[in-house]
Length: 214
Image 1 (tube, one colour):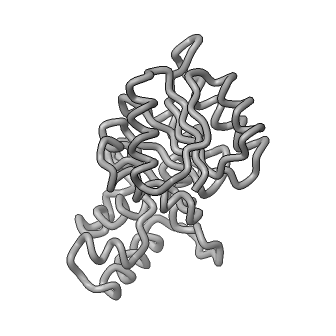
Image 2 (cartoon, helix red, strand yellow):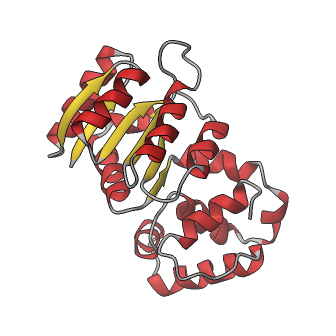
């Protein structure tokens, strides 16, 4: 996969480039600010951009703004946003700007080649990847409606919101796929989330509900 990396920290930027290349990806560009990133994407036509939330000059939400603008300019471009801390508002903003092929991870998570490669692969396949800690904080903001869920259903919901398939959830929880399917059906029934034929219905519906839009 053709990837561009953007982070103002030279050390982290070079580390990401190395890890991505070790994973077999083609890193076609690396930039230190949002303006250079926007120009680089137009020129180099990557399939995925990995970028920091906070970038020069203001070190506030320049990365988020750039990610949303890239999604607007380049349909189908994958976005993996990285953050030092959980910033739920930024995660919600990015996810609300489009469906599928997006991710939001804490930087500590991408120190592992396996973790980063898994995220990149799932985004490339059209999925949504959320850091487990972000998911927990999103769910924590909407605690009351979740009161009807069992502990098993809550765990399945968290994994669904991370973008995991039924088969992946079954492997992680050491149960059969049929058991996971029953939990998923129950979750949607309890939360009043309508059925749809869309491939990414589960993640989008759960995220919309967590964001108060569902």
